Image (cartoon, rainbow, N blue to C red; front, side, top):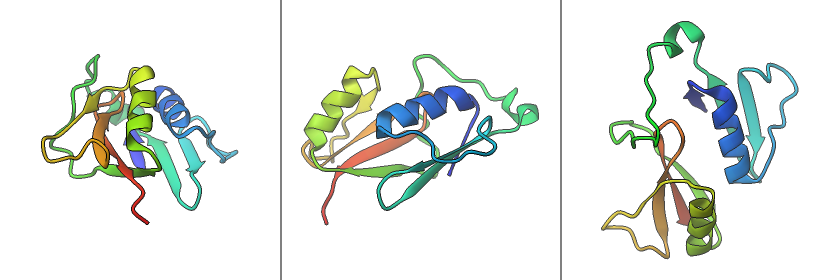
Length: 120
């Protein structure tokens, strides 16, 4: 689960990125549950009294100090990277990453996530 400030924007972003719509039918104004084929991913709105003090930048600044990094397995990293770049998602290619195996990206709130080759 990822707690988010701008719930609607993040729900739309991850729905588009993952290519699925939320499956939950309750609390849809603050909770989104995505079924992503064998795993579930959720977003939860940060309560307004706390969210007011969170500042976001545009374009998003990568939150490099965040102790959590989501990893999404994909079949074709270069193709997925191109698709995300076409959506305007900021991409980060780290010097230690093989571009055919993985790369990092930044969501609208600055959370860094990774797409990686499905090694199974």
